[in-house]
Length: 234
Ligand code: HEC
Ligand code: HEC
Image 1 (tube, rainbow, N blue to C red):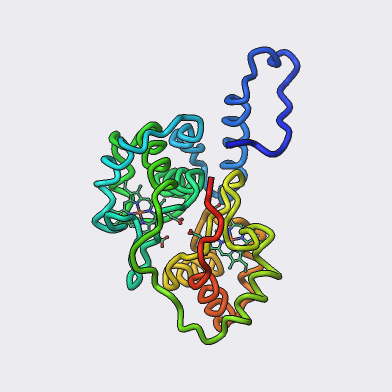
Image 2 (image 1 turned 180 degrees about the horizontal axis):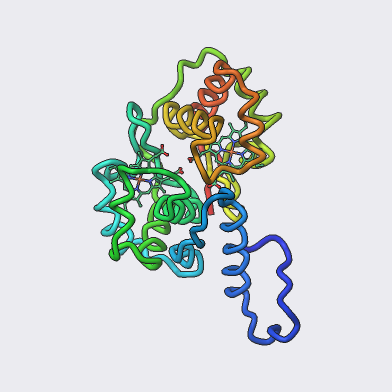
């Protein structure tokens, strides 16, 4: 994974400052800046997974703990708000698991599965590497398809700058892929984001989504749920 923007180490550290350290510091800054003002929680050590090489075979075995909810093929569930994880950017998986464990994103049912010592940075790197490379399969819940033109124009106007023109996300910036995600999950997350109940949400996105009436939230979620995953994530 490359870091797109410059990282300026203090001069005296220049020799030992490897790109890996640069990435870690950049990630720590980013994680801190996305914390709500009240949270005193330091960035979770799980973010170190970003600097580790994942082993997909070990990741597949470790993902066995997750399949009760996310399914064996990681396609999630259409009726319950459980996201598809197959094909999602490894960086997004790592950040979200880290945020869930750190309480920055509330997810009580899942928390026990990522809280224990069994979930360390290497295990998370393995799982994220496995999921990112996993081909998307299974049934993906789609919306009613009634207002797709409106959903498309809203997405292109307001969201594509951060989530990519085809909803493919931006791995380096931790912006999730939204294309081909379950409709109910997308809608629920947008409602949580709008109401300030998804603690790790990008503040600019919150301001934007707050202006959306329910019909527009539905139209965008519907459009995204029907969008094919046209760009292979890195
Ligand atoms: C008890 C059910 C349950 C189990 C077990 C579970 N999850 Fe989850 N997971 C959820 C739910 C529900 C959500 C969505 C919560 C929300 O709406 O914010 C979620 C969300 C996620 C997300 C965020 C995805 C995104 O697009 O933001 C990731 C990553 C994730 N889970 C990974 C895992 C991993 C890895 C494991 C196993 C170690 C696991 N989950 C086990 C229920 C579960
Ligand atoms: C300024 C950048 C930005 C804009 C604009 C933006 N988003 Fe986001 N969005 C993010 C980031 C960053 C996240 C991940 C939150 C985090 O973990 O910090 C996210 C997460 C999401 C999620 C949760 C995805 C998941 O897998 O759980 C949804 C849904 C979403 N955005 C929808 C939208 C929609 C719809 C719009 C347009 C109305 C939009 N976003 C505009 C940056 C943005």
